[in-house]
Length: 140
Image (cartoon, rainbow, N blue to C red; front, top):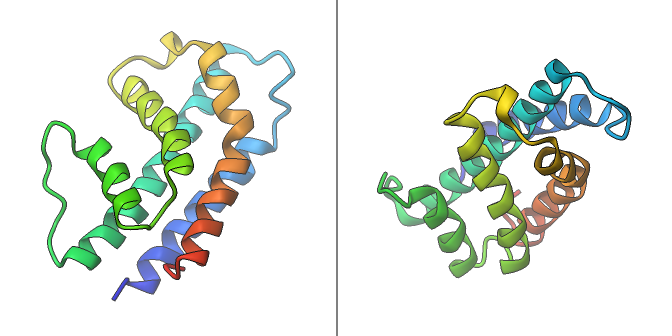
Protein backbone atom coordinates (compact mmCIF):
# COMPACT_ATOMS: atom_id res chain seq x y z
CA UNK A 1 0.00 0.00 0.00
CA UNK A 2 1.26 3.46 -0.90
CA UNK A 3 2.30 5.45 2.17
CA UNK A 4 -0.25 8.30 2.37
CA UNK A 5 1.96 10.44 4.65
CA UNK A 6 4.85 10.18 2.18
CA UNK A 7 2.60 11.23 -0.70
CA UNK A 8 0.95 14.02 1.29
CA UNK A 9 4.34 15.47 2.25
CA UNK A 10 5.57 15.46 -1.35
CA UNK A 11 2.30 16.85 -2.68
CA UNK A 12 2.54 19.71 -0.19
CA UNK A 13 6.15 20.42 -1.21
CA UNK A 14 5.21 20.37 -4.91
CA UNK A 15 2.24 22.68 -4.34
CA UNK A 16 4.35 25.13 -2.29
CA UNK A 17 7.12 25.12 -4.89
CA UNK A 18 4.60 25.69 -7.68
CA UNK A 19 3.05 28.58 -5.74
CA UNK A 20 6.44 30.29 -5.41
CA UNK A 21 7.31 29.59 -9.04
CA UNK A 22 4.07 31.06 -10.35
CA UNK A 23 4.13 34.10 -8.05
CA UNK A 24 6.60 35.89 -10.34
CA UNK A 25 5.68 37.30 -13.75
CA UNK A 26 7.89 35.13 -15.93
CA UNK A 27 7.30 37.40 -18.92
CA UNK A 28 9.06 40.26 -17.15
CA UNK A 29 12.82 40.73 -17.30
CA UNK A 30 14.43 38.43 -14.73
CA UNK A 31 17.93 39.00 -13.46
CA UNK A 32 20.39 36.07 -13.45
CA UNK A 33 19.63 35.29 -9.78
CA UNK A 34 15.89 35.09 -10.47
CA UNK A 35 16.50 32.94 -13.54
CA UNK A 36 18.70 30.53 -11.56
CA UNK A 37 16.11 30.40 -8.78
CA UNK A 38 13.36 29.66 -11.29
CA UNK A 39 15.46 26.86 -12.76
CA UNK A 40 15.99 25.42 -9.29
CA UNK A 41 12.25 25.45 -8.61
CA UNK A 42 11.67 23.55 -11.86
CA UNK A 43 14.29 21.02 -10.77
CA UNK A 44 12.57 20.72 -7.37
CA UNK A 45 9.17 20.14 -9.00
CA UNK A 46 10.45 17.29 -11.12
CA UNK A 47 12.33 15.75 -8.21
CA UNK A 48 9.09 15.71 -6.21
CA UNK A 49 7.20 14.12 -9.09
CA UNK A 50 9.88 11.49 -9.55
CA UNK A 51 9.91 10.72 -5.82
CA UNK A 52 6.16 10.09 -5.89
CA UNK A 53 6.37 7.90 -9.00
CA UNK A 54 9.32 5.94 -7.62
CA UNK A 55 7.47 5.37 -4.36
CA UNK A 56 4.36 4.13 -6.17
CA UNK A 57 6.45 1.78 -8.34
CA UNK A 58 8.35 0.40 -5.39
CA UNK A 59 5.13 -0.26 -3.50
CA UNK A 60 3.59 -1.99 -6.53
CA UNK A 61 6.66 -4.12 -7.22
CA UNK A 62 7.61 -4.73 -3.57
CA UNK A 63 11.19 -3.85 -4.47
CA UNK A 64 13.43 -0.81 -4.80
CA UNK A 65 13.93 0.81 -8.19
CA UNK A 66 17.33 -0.32 -9.42
CA UNK A 67 19.77 2.57 -9.87
CA UNK A 68 21.02 1.80 -13.37
CA UNK A 69 22.38 4.35 -15.84
CA UNK A 70 18.83 4.81 -17.18
CA UNK A 71 16.81 4.60 -13.97
CA UNK A 72 15.31 8.08 -14.25
CA UNK A 73 13.94 7.31 -17.74
CA UNK A 74 12.95 3.83 -16.61
CA UNK A 75 10.70 5.25 -13.89
CA UNK A 76 8.67 7.16 -16.48
CA UNK A 77 8.43 4.25 -18.92
CA UNK A 78 7.52 1.78 -16.16
CA UNK A 79 4.83 4.15 -14.90
CA UNK A 80 3.31 4.30 -18.38
CA UNK A 81 3.49 0.50 -18.77
CA UNK A 82 1.75 0.01 -15.41
CA UNK A 83 -0.96 2.60 -16.14
CA UNK A 84 0.12 5.02 -13.43
CA UNK A 85 0.50 7.92 -15.87
CA UNK A 86 -0.29 8.42 -19.55
CA UNK A 87 2.29 8.42 -22.32
CA UNK A 88 1.40 12.07 -23.07
CA UNK A 89 2.21 13.07 -19.50
CA UNK A 90 5.38 10.97 -19.60
CA UNK A 91 6.54 12.88 -22.69
CA UNK A 92 5.94 16.21 -20.94
CA UNK A 93 7.73 14.99 -17.83
CA UNK A 94 10.68 13.81 -19.93
CA UNK A 95 11.43 17.46 -20.77
CA UNK A 96 11.50 18.29 -17.05
CA UNK A 97 13.67 15.25 -16.33
CA UNK A 98 16.20 16.23 -19.01
CA UNK A 99 16.27 19.78 -17.72
CA UNK A 100 16.76 18.60 -14.16
CA UNK A 101 19.73 16.51 -15.29
CA UNK A 102 21.36 19.50 -17.03
CA UNK A 103 20.68 21.76 -14.06
CA UNK A 104 22.04 19.34 -11.46
CA UNK A 105 25.19 18.56 -13.42
CA UNK A 106 25.89 22.11 -14.55
CA UNK A 107 26.01 25.61 -13.19
CA UNK A 108 22.91 27.74 -12.66
CA UNK A 109 24.24 30.71 -14.59
CA UNK A 110 24.61 28.47 -17.65
CA UNK A 111 20.90 27.58 -17.84
CA UNK A 112 19.44 28.86 -21.09
CA UNK A 113 16.43 31.03 -20.23
CA UNK A 114 14.85 30.02 -23.57
CA UNK A 115 14.72 26.45 -22.20
CA UNK A 116 13.77 27.41 -18.65
CA UNK A 117 10.89 29.78 -19.41
CA UNK A 118 8.61 27.30 -21.28
CA UNK A 119 9.09 24.74 -18.51
CA UNK A 120 8.31 27.36 -15.87
CA UNK A 121 5.22 28.67 -17.63
CA UNK A 122 3.99 25.13 -18.38
CA UNK A 123 4.62 23.75 -14.90
CA UNK A 124 1.17 24.50 -13.48
CA UNK A 125 -0.57 22.58 -16.26
CA UNK A 126 1.84 19.63 -16.01
CA UNK A 127 1.44 19.44 -12.22
CA UNK A 128 -2.36 19.62 -12.48
CA UNK A 129 -2.34 16.84 -15.08
CA UNK A 130 0.02 14.76 -12.92
CA UNK A 131 -2.23 14.98 -9.87
CA UNK A 132 -5.38 14.43 -11.95
CA UNK A 133 -3.96 11.24 -13.50
CA UNK A 134 -2.81 9.89 -10.15
CA UNK A 135 -6.27 10.55 -8.70
CA UNK A 136 -8.04 9.02 -11.71
CA UNK A 137 -5.82 5.93 -11.41
CA UNK A 138 -6.48 5.78 -7.63
CA UNK A 139 -2.96 6.50 -6.42
CA UNK A 140 -4.04 9.65 -4.59
